[in-house]
Image 1 (cartoon, rainbow, N blue to C red):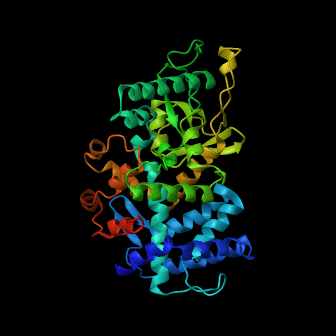
Image 2: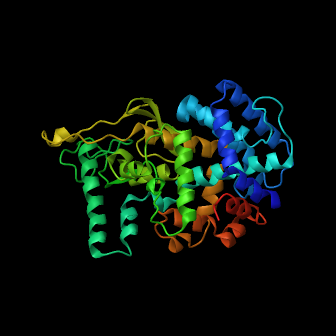
Image 3: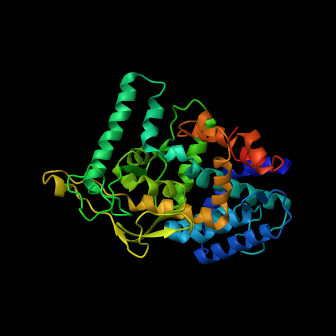
Length: 397
């Protein structure tokens, strides 16, 4: 579709960015902007825009529902700031000077909304669905795989040091089931079996990899798009740099201990933590059939630093960052409410051999290449090239 590429270029243009900022800073109330953005999406939903709906064997994803999901979750994700950003992003797809008023119906406007939905789909939701990108044991080893022995040794050491910190902080205990790790020096005698607990990532570490050292400018720009959207959509501080985020994602602020059986559904985006107060959360399941070992869903979980119980002189260890849990939960709700959960699960669990092609799936170069596996994606989804056209349109070339 000829207009698709033009629409994508508009999203990344200075004209769009200027219009977006003007709308965010306008005198219109947040409620007015939200209602106007809903009207824009409603027009898109009732249009005959080609490529708005993708059919999958496990369900259907409709791009208007992607836009609606971001509108619906904006308040919880980042408050008023997020609501104005999401609404303004949608309204700015219009070429009319009126911010609030008539809803345009021209094909170019509808094409821009389609591309905006694809940007959010591929740059915000997609990165959370690469399983090996969330594996803390593989992440640093992947970075060192083509480097020196010293780099490889440092990567392994980092993983061991981090897990030792988590053992002390989390009290050698799974926050969900309450079971002790088999190495616990103070096991609960009434606790059922003692499995080996593993380190669980809250956010994929790839989210902080906005590095100019990457050889492909496309990947740098694409990673920056994701980073900028997440800062605008969530409560990640505006002043936080990619380097600062990357450092936090490597440490205890982005990790906690779980049984392996409970990590799998967490990484699979079937459950998450909904915050009640600082460091206290409810467990929310989004797939009823997904098991959680020892989980009593009506009991809140509170993260506490237990390190002093094992060593009175041990310095405090940072708790999991509530902002990171909030980002995870917001993307989780968006993915389930718009159908993206089925969409990406089918793409990546059905691509025979993709983990062998991209064993670590940790850099944005890996992410871009994986999404562009055109032959396998077309074989799975039979979209007649529409998905690849949409995804190619929202990347820089």
